[in-house]
Image (cartoon, rainbow, N blue to C red):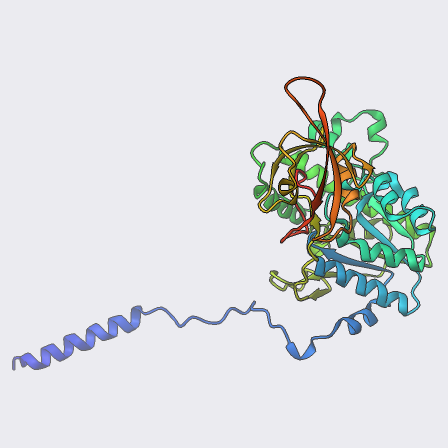
Length: 390
């Protein structure tokens, strides 16, 4: 008996649906590696400090130009000090040859401006000193030793140019005693950073990596030497987060030299939480650094000549011109870029200052001109190009 047309159509549709169901992919399962953050266990900074009192070394990371990060560093230092911890503070932003100047500052023998001049802060670090100022002032007021962690720039600049093998015997003597091959994970992380470097095509990665290793090894060795000399002290190390995350960089190199009970505290903002990233993550509210009083000029750093002006420049409004060489600010001689930064340190927008400049003339000697400049505010004061005044 022949199949009815309607029955043949029914069988065809049934077979089609069976084929589709058979070919359909299995339902997507949730990723078993999905991380879960238990919000019921979040703590405040005071509770964190209580935990940190058990540690001999506390690494507190920073993004150098973020004021909130430095305020949290200060809060941790202050909290540990209040709990009776004998502290020292290791700082990446100061280089090792200037340790005696940090010691003199803590003893009250020199003031802030002398410290900044002697340590060549504005040439070697250049971030707005006000970011670190509360920490240094607290350390001085409480007599907490400051430790210059970083290797001097002269050595790292030479390594960038000629590599470690190209250093002289005297330069080799300044290197850390132990230079160990970096773990592959560390190498990969530095390579990812290198690829985003604006001059990556002009630089040699192996030398770039060697500089990173030198920074980390030298800071770890400096910290280990200090802890051997002062075993009863706890050390709070303030450094860029890239030197600390995943325990790579300074922490693992310190542990190789001197096993210590340590904790790593990083800022979690804009980071994906990971069990191996750090021991603790902080989520601070953004805190802007108060606007600094600025001349509003672009400078030739070698001759301290005005190359140009920013928008709404107080210096331009006062009649200064491109080509003027700054000689004095409020009676202070200006011979270097650092002199400009020191003369404007802690000045506020709206303050009036006296500026003397030398202006070239087509005929005859240059003219010396004095003007009064009303300082204007900087809407983003944490870090500027070295050519821009503070």
